[in-house]
Image 1 (cartoon, helix red, strand yellow):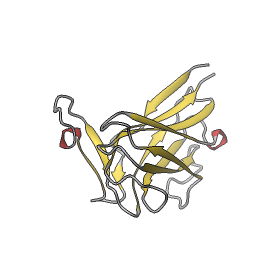
Image 2: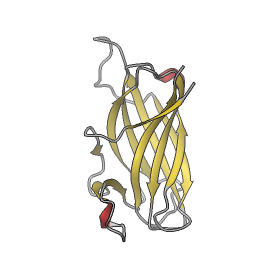
Image 3: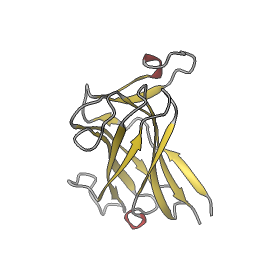
Image 4: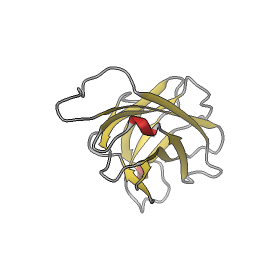
Length: 167
């Protein structure tokens, strides 16, 4: 059995909270403008703000699914609350992609980096029985400023990974 990580930030991603969540170049925040790449910025607000997207469950998926939030911040104190809501849609001509509600909502809290811009990973465990090979997973990732989010600065999303095991 091996563990795989699939990047799920792609062209399907769209901010749910335009203005409070936006996609920009990392050089907007970094002091060294050498490594230019896109990030998603989650501002510090007292509300739940996010972005949404979708991905397909790979052919070699067996179980132990997790979402890995890779992020950083210029801040060095406080906590960020990440919420992940999703619904898996499967079959061929059997389930609608146009559904309301989530199949599961999961949350993780992570501390700000110990030094500005250090890379952080926070795992969020998903329910294995909710996912099957070839499912389309519709998802939303939120920074929940209405919860115990105490970091008084932007959270910079560097990557979002679907981690799973094969047989």
